[in-house]
Image (cartoon, rainbow, N blue to C red; front, side, top):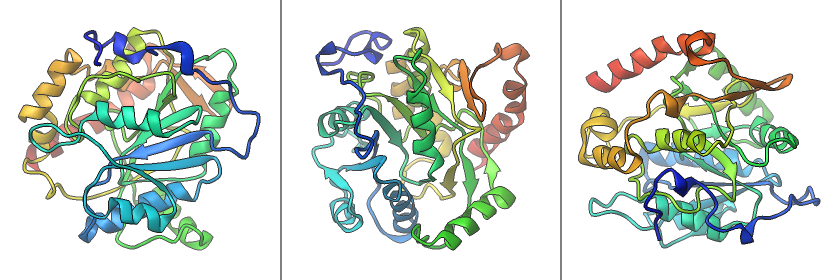
Length: 311
């Protein structure tokens, strides 16, 4: 049953399922769960690249694909990752986030869960960063996110071939475009969190801001991993959606309903962290008005708004 208070919904509804950190390091520490679109065309290439990059992170990472759209179960079997059916949708046929999070909790046993969009390539620095965060004993719980880098990827990547991975990373450095902090492609959190959340529509605006805003409201540390995690967002169009990007994220009925469910848009609060992970460990973020990274993101945010309006 959904909690009537969206802020309180973040927290654990029962302490009975809390787990001690596993001493067996051969077990996966995190389950990446995702909701793929129907497979086919360019979407097939993009999603297979993403899922294969995650699967390559075993044994530290377990991969769970949710949904019954065309090709999801078959692709999971082919790539050696897990699949769960029974994902619920709204009246528009859009998957519901509360159903996805409920399935992820039910189908996993790892200490951490990570929601990730199915067009994002991740590398070894993803589980390595989670391991570093888990070693910070003064954080009993946390929510982490990071910026993405947009890159046009026009080929299948074999992640078992180091030369192909190295080429991809070089292209990311030379051709990739860092996106704004408001474009959050993944969330990492302790499994005690987000067991009950509002029925947000996936792929529409505002729910991702609620994730961060609600964590802060409940005094859960929010950590920016942008300096330590490479998240390659494979550029794509929005032909799968009946609306343009502005409609999907701002003006459409589902985006507006997400905003209502979350109690607002929370653009700034939902896109800023109070901690950051660096090579020297966790560092406290400066307040927004004197934080150089906050002002450095302003041009990226402006560009994003322009792209939403014209595309």
